[in-house]
Length: 252
Ligand code: 13P
Image (cartoon, rainbow, N blue to C red; front, top):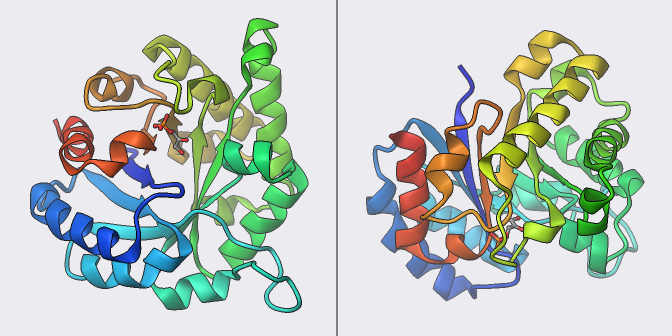
């Protein structure tokens, strides 16, 4: 019933010309693989070129962040309206690298999510525990709290345009992957939290991705889990064959 969403997060990789070549190479490889939605979240300066290259394909383009104000004196920031006009349909909000290195808090993540939704963007909302939290046995509390704070004031209707990406911080870019059981369990905790805040129906419909060293070798077993509805992929989204193999796993 829930559709898989396979999304790449390029992070700070790929110039506009590299983005164009990548998408031109990827498009025929994923053509017709329509059991999942395919999204590439790219650096701001790549969005327009990527959207142009993806026109007429089944690849959608997203951004990696958005500011919460509509306009004004916020040097270096990008508004939701700018993203939409550049061709973005999705935006990542709350990625752990933004939380770790750029002082994002649950409060700003919540504001960014609301601004993106208001502009008609689909949001990929990232959350997850750090290593010390998992080792202390408080993962469930941490992700439940983040889910509540990040979604504060967002209606059940608006929730339809949000995907949650569960990304254990210790698994990002480390080659360490959560086991399929860990991914399933913690995505399940997030789903139960959605049921508590909203409804069973909202929880059933919520798309929850796993992210953290997902690759062509482990995607199938992660995606086989009941609570895992897709992937948010960093490193492996920079290689067309690896990304295609993950799309294939979602189409099997
Ligand atoms: P890696 O797949 O490189 O671990 O990155 C995951 C991630 O942060 C996706 O947003």
